[in-house]
Length: 583
Image (cartoon, rainbow, N blue to C red):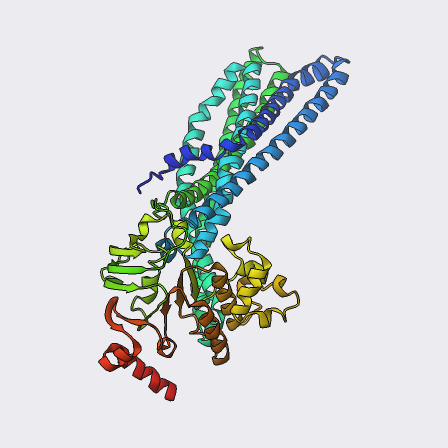
């Protein structure tokens, strides 16, 4: 899907993010207008302050003007509070909305997206990018409106004091506009690169810290630090360029302001000599001009905030505009019988010339076990990921109960599957919440306990301080590998799906844990269509059929005895493992 993500297109999309907060923003806008009016009212008072109090020495002005000043600043303070509170509410609300939308989108993207984009990059989009977009939409808009109203109010005061002097000073306007355009272009050039480098730094840190044991054992600390330091240095250089741009633009604004003051002094002097400008009028012009200069400076600085937000919005819109998983199925499926057919399946990953799967055909029948074996990288995991449609085949068809998988709605299809992998993913929470996960959340405690007993997990669960309500830590960190595996099996048992996928479920376990897990799997497998990816061939000797993959092709198919008698690839793999076990 091709989507226009030019800066202009992004600018057009940003206001739509604020639509849910229109009422809040209108209140904030009212506060901004009151702030600007209060600033203008104070500017209007400066002329009578000088002319009436110090020149004409009017005693009434000495009492009324101080009271008027206090009243103006009370109004301005209340208006500022309203603006800040409601602008912040809208900004934080937009950041929250973007996080939720991006998270929801990621969970609806095809599996290939997760092969091409690292999780740390996703976390940057969910974190700092969402905040930067909120700043672009609301915080920068607040500064621009606030300071623009200040400039307009002060220009009004200046025109009231002397339109001739004001028009002369306004000759600087085109110069300021040109400078702000140049600053904006430079910010755009560096803003996106800063965000990308930030994501690369997070990825490098995530890899090094997540694999800290390997880093230490293989003496890779220096190499990882060199890589991370290089990225940090690049980020520093880009950040300094952004800051230099901001600083130069501020300095130019101040210089322009100084030139403006000089022009004001020159022309105001001529007007005073002609008798068209009083001392109070001159002070009014001077104070208004001094109020405009910092407002212009802030308007220039807001470019940085705005351009960072645009760069972040571009990254987020790339995610939000991506195509969802294809889900056009219309055939409802309550519970499948479990007849699985792969017909001439081919799959080539984007950007790859060689197919990952090439011409694979087989049938897995209900109540049988189909083992899938082969060397590492032969396509075993890719093959089973076609069943839940994490990947879509480039050619051929996968059928369930005689119908293509695409005929079924994705939620219905995935309800027919339970998966137990080598890398068990548990969540920070209780034992019960991890077993009764997702659509199983409403399961009765008796069913959860039965699933835990069948999975040989109750023996260690009962020893935990809080039993079923015990916290297992992030990713189940408080449990051993075998315990985590048995919780995953209990989850699959509770789901009671007609199709079971086991992806090297015992490969990383010690012998004692493997026996417990294998016994639990023996309770889980009957009466289901089971696909088992196996590294240790001894675990699949009793499978109803064994598929041997090599370089993405199905090179052999049969029972354990048939394949051994054939003396082919399977027999060779079996002999190698037998020798390794004997050694």
